[in-house]
Image (cartoon, rainbow, N blue to C red):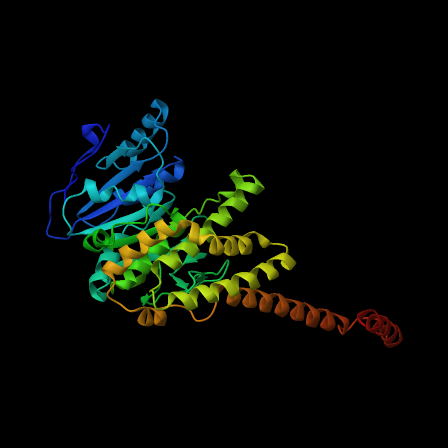
Length: 400
């Protein structure tokens, strides 16, 4: 596997590694907003103990002299053997990653896609490769923990229902106590860090270029299932992720637009990947769920997501050409019936399940607080029996 194309890259940054008897891996890092995290990401890749790793850095956005110099410096200082390509625009994460299909020859080996705000442990690539061969998987990914507190879990795979709704395996602020350290199949892995067989990635046609990075990973993993590829989480490999929030840099309207876009991409991905015989029922269920979610969202004071789901569904016929093209691509490569894929998906609605769990936690906390307050009322005091009796009487009256 050798890099065949690059632009505006000084020769000292290009050092393709010679084959050393192990499958080659090309790590692909897309850089858009350069930060300190980018240097940490590249340094972690350069420090990998895997002996046949090539790093490909794709710099997107407007390439001013200042930006180009900064990116070159970061690469030279942290991953001097990396290959750097400047792109004149920002096509999006998935479309940028697809450049590996034209820049790298052959179908042997693997591609490691990693966000520039993620840091992979030094043995990460080795552990992912080992488990991929052991499990005969097509896509593998590490356990992902918080950048600021490595004890806090972010992801150990993601469950998905038939409507494309994600159901996180870990709860918010869950502490890592090795409770999720078993290797297991999962429906999808986040694009934060995933390793995929090069031949599989090429046969799938890469990421769907029309999707943002928040949705491209779901589409890729879902399509991988349709051709019988296993998606496996490998907790022995660990990556920490900064998980920068975009909402802090956007106005409330822009945040709502991002939410609506995410819902549109989810709905369109569901329509594009669901097998034809199952599609009418799924569309009907989506419509019912969208209406129910819209009603709940209005009363809960957060209708943006529910409206995005409903609006995207009813306007999907306006995108029939694009959806038909995506469906044809899936149909031509499909090997596995959706009936088998359903066994890998969450039952029912992941969103409603998450809502019920949240309400249960709120109710449970309220009951616990109530029990605590009652216990407080019955606390003994050090006063005399008369004073204590009066105090208790007052307390009981107050507790009622």
